[in-house]
Length: 178
Image (cartoon, rainbow, N blue to C red; front, side, top):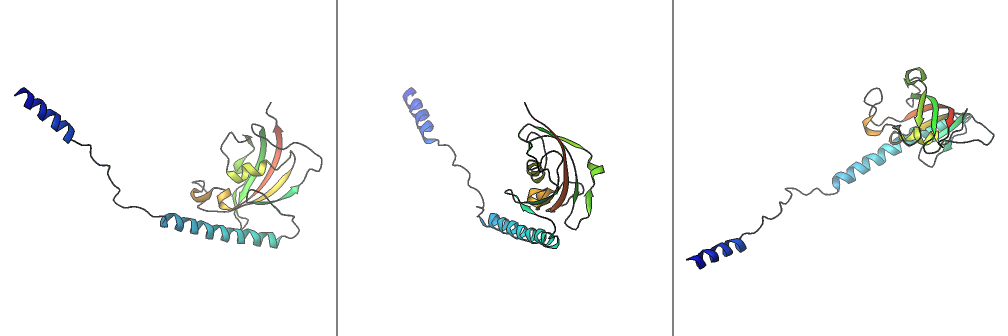
């Protein structure tokens, strides 16, 4: 009886198999992602057209297209060769935020003077990249498409979904990281 019992145990052991992996109930195709990409392309084109209208209405300003996808001009340009912010430098700056119709969203008084450690703290992408183009004492006006500003989520306060922005920025000082 013992050999039969052992044989039964061995046969049970080898006949048991692990359950098959559960298959997804529905397979999502790329159509959702394609539709999302198409919406973003249309939004980007619309915002680019709005920004181009502002540029065309202000021919007295010498707008510069950044490599990062926003435009800017200098209200005050420093001619002499001086430093620009680098990783880890501490910058002191003031700025305001407007929508593309020049309506103030946040004034300089609302925001107050900011001290920011370059690339080590939270700051929206466009402003972080814009500061890197400035020298102490310069004032620049930036036109940011929404993806360089607060994007889809906004700031959960005064800036809504997909809002392109105008920011006038004054770079006060740079303390270089040693």
